[in-house]
Length: 265
Image 1 (tube, rainbow, N blue to C red):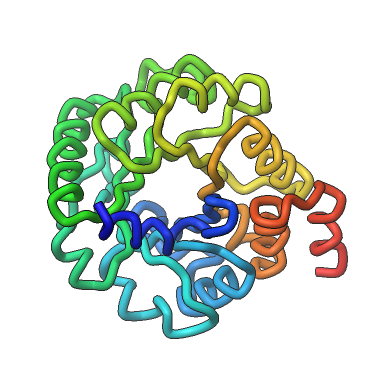
Image 2 (image 1 turned 60 degrees about the vertical axis):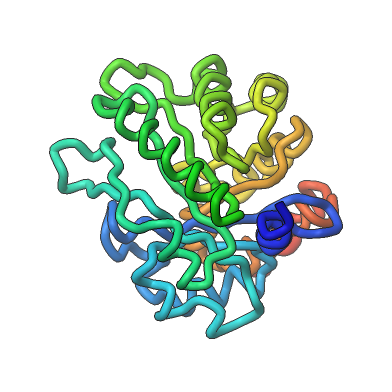
């Protein structure tokens, strides 16, 4: 489908086929946390740093996308829940594929918590959205997580392999999952998922080295990029942090070379 291929070229860097996606959809779940209070400034920083795409909710498109910095791919997030809810793991659909296209989206994304109380409904929603995406030739990024009262370790390789495969089986064009913590085990995740795999950035960490090691490790394991939020836009220097991650993904820089971009920041 030529339309989908064209849109994917706005999300993935053409020369390498890798993606640096920066999600900024946290405002619904957590409120205007530090780093995304000024969405225009955040988009400007990550775009100038080399991000290929951002993820935001439909209501923020008019407030910041493509108005500043360099052009960057737009992924409109379709799922939502809040930390104020008694069931925060239950994601509901808050927009449509057609509405996202009218806003100028290059792709859409959804969030599915497998293992949550209502994961059956989330999977049903995903199946319907896959059909809509195919009808409109627009890519779908599926954020697949193992979350729920019976999930002891959301970073367990067998769980991550399973949820990644679910994403591909239902029809996602790109699957985002947690990083298992090391290159060897994450290679098993990639091997079991025919769709391109991106890793989530996870909670904010204090060590730049830890973030860059995660990026390098997942790429060595065969991932097609990363989807990092807090560890970029809550960094003391979001633009250079984006540039450091970008240098590993697109220029194949070493950890030491990438780290030099952050020494003076």
